[in-house]
Length: 300
Image (cartoon, rainbow, N blue to C red; front, side):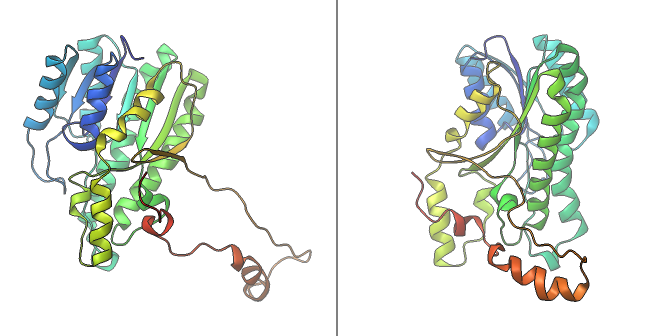
């Protein structure tokens, strides 16, 4: 499906990114395996994870190179694209998977907690898109696969920074799909359910939380990769969509659209909004749900 295509997978040293890189390579892609090798909170750096993935791809007969850049730095994103062009002679797919977590209840969240998560997830995705856009435009083809989360799409406790970043990526992905469609460039989002070291940082104080994490452990990162390869296939014309994967289930997620309206011919005052508009729409308000409140059945 991807014979002769060049792919950059960020955060590909472990977890979901690792399995995406391996499956991309197994379907013929030449892969830039990017991973700073940081801890789950973004601290430190280690070249070992990315190198191990590259070694595995080469041992299986594929082509891959390591990259240890930080997606939060525009110069590193640009260098990643240049590396793919220099080593593989092209770039066709960007998988924006790199991420960190700094989970903390909002009123205790520091500016650094906020900035660091936004920088890696949202700015990192922007940096990669910005770096490759001129090349995609020139060759009139390309594909972005961006990773969002149900923590943003639905909600979760203690993840204001992560949720905001992941919803920002939804907006970025849709903008890429719209702005780059004239150049035959596609962009989609995936919200994965999969056990990874980031998920391993989730607090498990209650029995319900422990049970939830045990269910997530059953969902391996390898389950995410097939959709990524399918979306990267140059014969695929899907763009501007949000998908969710949970074990063997693939969901197409909704996007905001009007569902209810109210009208007063004389216009609105604060009082009539309070007494008429809000009560009229209340039946359609959304509850303060989390992912576990929406996905109430066990993974299939």
